[in-house]
Image (cartoon, rainbow, N blue to C red; front, top):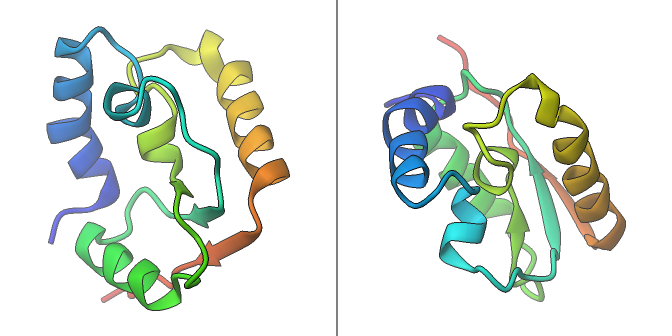
Length: 106
């Protein structure tokens, strides 16, 4: 399947650019959501395998997940790096779970 990077480039970026350039997460939930879990991903990780792994690891009492590629504006330039770091730090502060999906490389 496609990598997380390919999904971001070919689907996430065009959709969020059309909607004004915010992150996918803010486009879908403008009021924001409390973060219960943070998942770590690799940009070259297979998107569908990643989703399958996260579903297997999902805590029963969690509702919302922070994913970098969905939660940070992907259209922003390098000057926005500090904003991305603040978003990730905030998610890590409130999350009760850290999910790490293994990447299968062929």
